[in-house]
Image (cartoon, rainbow, N blue to C red; front, top):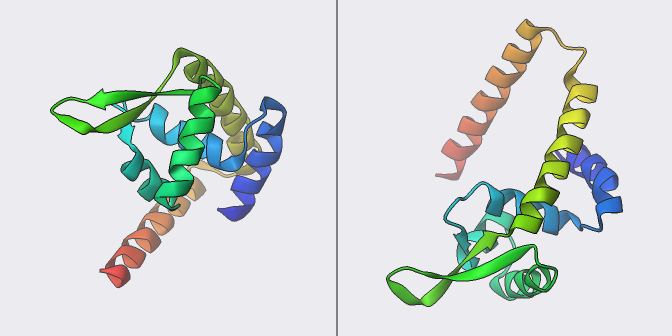
Amino acid sequence: AKSWREELDRRLRPLGLTRIQWLALLMVSRAPQGLTQRELADALDIGEPATVALVDRMERDDLVARVPVPGDRRRNAVRATPASRRLFTRIEAAATVLRQEVLGNLTKDELATLHRLLTKTKQRIEAVRA
């Protein structure tokens, strides 16, 4: 996973994104209603002060917008902007190319086995943590 992130990070550098920014964009883009800053902090495994600074920078760059959470005046959701959605399309394209380069030589059976083993490993990690 680390090697994958490092290579994707290298390929996305020309877009002017740091690893934490493209990861945040990925998470926010997958949440149609947005994420609270706390949810984003938990997803990124970073502290809330670092998340506030990250969202401030991304908001300044028009990549995200803070919008009130309905029914809770104390919280804001972080949502993707049209500009970040266009950028996310480029991120997805780079990830798709990398995925094809890395996994393209595996057969369907090998991919199925890989998926099964990774899923089993993830389930075991979650069980150990519980």
